[in-house]
Length: 260
Image (cartoon, rainbow, N blue to C red; front, side, top):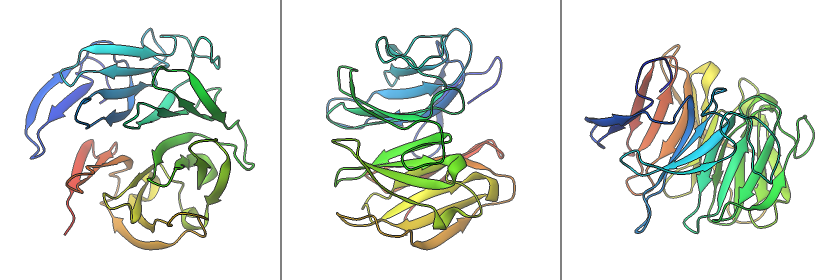
């Protein structure tokens, strides 16, 4: 959460009971990704602050111990050696340790960066603009089981898709986002659907996920209309239970939805 003199990270049980909080070295958290493998339960946070801790991606233990900092704390930039970010919006980490960072939430960079598990560049896609493969605020990123990387290209009002091995551009969807751009994108636990947060119209869009091959056209199969001014900002899915969590910056709350 954001604000002065408050803990930046709150930890809750799956039932919604507050457990504990931590605050060190987090300035303005934006995206959060929790690994849930047999050997790794790291918490990754993107920090879009502009002070001494900002412009970074950080790895923590579940108890809040700082384990790794990617980027140059307090210094915005575009360099790959040393690695720099400018308000990185979100990170997605695979079980292999390879990771995808959308950089950023404003600032000089509009790019998608794939890093190896030793934090070296594998490939880089995107510049500022409206053309194919360009971004205007790449705000969220996720990966499907057939090797495609999905990016919420927020201010261009589209989702763009890339090959996870090569970084090759595969296509985009825009027809579902004429009313509002996508702020967050995640797959349901069965990978049959994508859940997309549309903040300015207080809506979750449920889209049919294409099978392997061409992404085809965007097909909206359902929507969840949230209360006025809730402003859903980011979404995540528990891939074991199927529960959907929605972080709302208008209502200043998190809602949990469970599959029926």
